Length: 149
Image 1 (tube, rainbow, N blue to C red):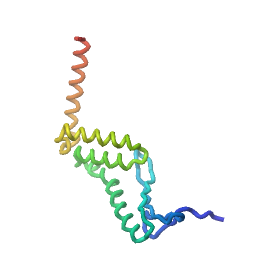
Image 2 (cartoon, rainbow, N blue to C red):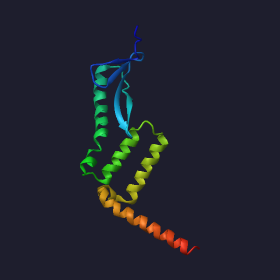
Image 3 (spheres, rainbow, N blue to C red):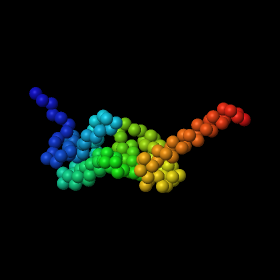
């Protein structure tokens, strides 16, 4: 004899109903760091027609998250696009603690504040700056070794 599951399927894709509470939930599979994870979203309703509309809205957000890296695959993305993808994926990653997400968002905010032109640059335009900065640090470290205090 089969045991009844807690979840009831609906005719709408990604929409499930909890038998005990009657509430509807959206369920998607997202790949995070090469691992497939399920993302569940409580739609906060027990009315099917409302749940259908809400699951469609959430599906749009999920698809946007999934497709946000397509510009980089095509080679046309900017650093601003890359930072937005990083922000979206950080917020959507269920393995991250809230403090980690906040820390990442603060770091992105500081980076945007100190280097406003960064958003419009392509990643290949940023690499020379990083290389230059690394060279300056190496020179300062060598100078400090030769001339301590």
